[in-house]
Image (cartoon, rainbow, N blue to C red; front, side, top):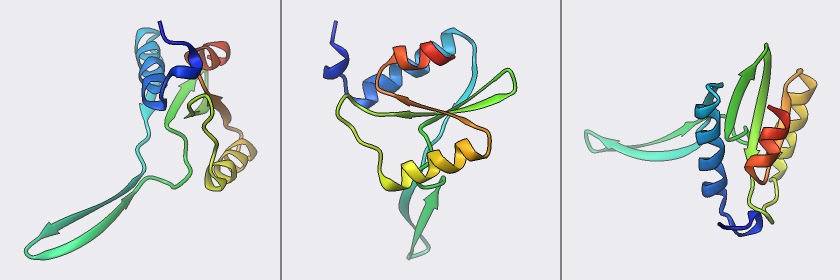
Length: 107
């Protein structure tokens, strides 16, 4: 079995999502980014999601949690730190998850 510091963000996120399904938590994967698409010879650029928002949202007992997944040495961007600050000011709980254990400890 891989040690926590050997796992990629994708692997950690997959573990967390599987655990949330197993525990039957109400959650959703939050996708953010941008994409180009063409239609009728026109290229359009689309943005989706809120930049800096966490990877996963969970609602439990009336509390909303934002889960940002980072690999062992991963760092939050300035936008993510700002989002975390504003989210917590608004009453949300934020989890910086470097492993499934980080999420299990809170949820």
